[in-house]
Length: 114
Image (cartoon, rainbow, N blue to C red; front, side):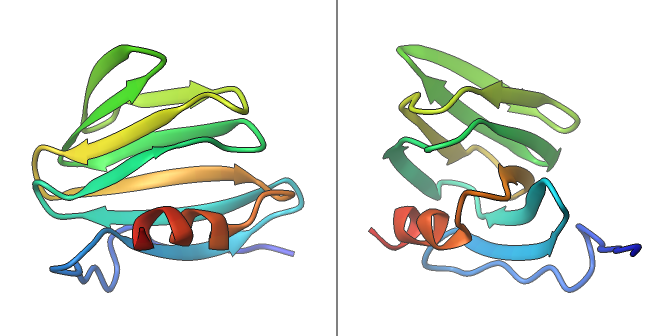
């Protein structure tokens, strides 16, 4: 089966918090789009499985294990499980998050809601 999605179709930011949308699931991953307005944050949290995050547009500050990374359009970062990390948008940003299929998008939603 072939699945397609667009990271830039129907982009609507939420003025109150980062917006999370599952674009599709494959046999191995859940592909999620995160839309963040400048200044929005995702507080420090951990994952149960490794993740890969890619900035498709904009810029974010990504902190993990006491290190700060200024990520720009095109940058990727990978984390093993159980690593505390946080994000803050420096500009309006479109971010791709690849989760393990065993992980849940609801977990990401809880981080944004708190």
